[in-house]
Image (cartoon, rainbow, N blue to C red):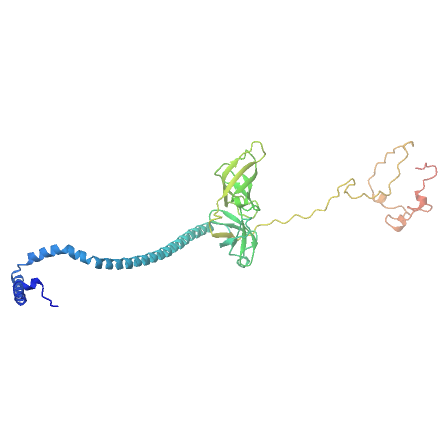
Length: 372
C-alpha cells in the first residue's frame, strides 16, 4: 500500500525552497528589530494578546505553589501561636508573682510602720496554713518556743488586733482569731469611752457586743479599741467597727454587730507582741463555813471561881459604903511586926484553923449562913 504526502505539501514550491524563503524572512526581521527596533509595537501587541493565555496556562503551577505555601504558613502560624501562648502564660505568672511581691512589700512596709509606733517589742511572723478544724477560726504561724513565743501573746497586723496565741510548739504556734466562738476581748468605744466585751461568732467572721443596754450611746461607724482591762492586749489597739445596731424595746439588752478591722482573711504577715500578759495572783483559799443551826463561833469555856447568886426570896444584904482611901505612907506600906511580908511563902499560907482554898471545908458555908 502506497502512501502519498498531504495535499499541502504537493501544491506550490518544493519544501526546500519554502524553508529557504522563510529563513531569509526571519533573518531580515531579526536584523530590522536589532538595528531599527521596528518590531517593538508588534511584540507589545502580541504580549498583550497572549497574556490571558499565559495566566491560564500558569494556573495549575500557581495553585500547587500556593497550596504548599498555605500549609507551610499554617503550620508556622500554629507554632507561633503556641509559642506566644507559652510566653503569655509565663508573663502572666511573672506578673502575678510581681503583684504578690508588691502586695507583700506594701504589707511589710505597713507592718514596719506599725511596729515603730508600738510601745512594746514585737516579732514578725508569717501564716503557714489554716487550722484543720473547720468549726474553729485558727491559723498556724512559723514562730514557736525556739523564737520566744509563749502562750497568751497577742497577735496584730497593721490595721488592728488579729487574735491570741493559744498553743505553742517548738517551731510553730497556733493563733485563735478574734472571730472564734471561744474568744472574747474587752473593748471600748473610741468616741465616748464606753466599755464592753466583744465576742466572736465563728464562721460568720464578725463580733458581737453582748449585754448592751438598749439606750447605750453607740452608733453605726463607731470604732472599737482595746481597753487593756484584761492585761493581755495593750490599750489603744484597733479592734473592729460597728456595722449594725439593733435596739430591742421589749427586751433588756440590745444587739451590736461589729466587723474586724484587721485583715484576718487577707494578710499573710503578722506581728506577735512579745509582752507576756500580767496574770494576777490567785486569792488565798478561804476556810469553808459551816452552815446550820449551830454557830461557827468557838465554844466559850465555863467560868470558874464565881460567887453563887443569892436566892430570890432572901433579903438583900445592906450595901456598905467603902471607906475613903488614904494616901499610902511608908509606914502604912510596911507590914506590922510579926506579919509576914506580901509575896512570901508565909503570907500565902492560910492562917491556923482556916481551911485551905479549894477543900470541901472551904466551900461549905459558915454556921448561921443560909445555904445557897
